Image (cartoon, rainbow, N blue to C red; front, side, top):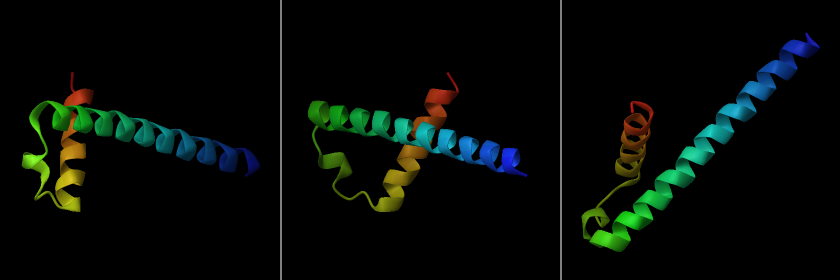
Length: 64
């Protein structure tokens, strides 16, 4: 039982670190896009819009 718990915990931590790293890369990309193209295209984004954009960004990067 102890080993199973440790394995699940390590998988959880690894998964969270992966999502955190993907988020950091996405935000850097977003900042770069705003630097190059301005903020106008993002002014009306909702939280859901950013979430969808992040999901699409990750999907695009993982399908390469």
